[in-house]
Image (tube, rainbow, N blue to C red; front, side, top):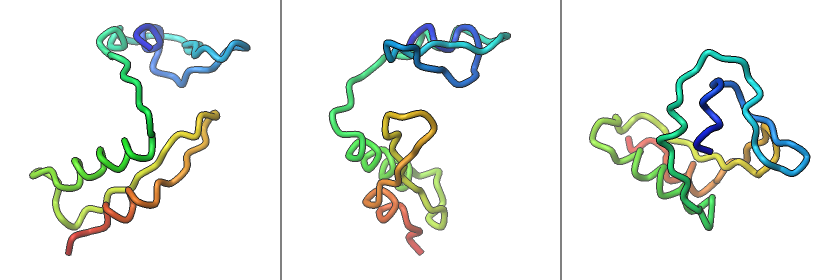
Length: 92
């Protein structure tokens, strides 16, 4: 992950071995070197927790809905996390 953003900010593509490769053309910054990978055991639970943290942050107005989506592991396909979306409904 650390080197994926160094060439460009374009989407990455997986090679035949399933490894993400940065195939975009520059310019870019090496911001990716500051990213640390953490293993997420349950993506849906992680999205739920992150959504709640965003929803109840003091700088997020109560009437702003927060939705939860999970990458299913294939290119470009997102799946809604219903529990995260339900928790993110407006509080008014």
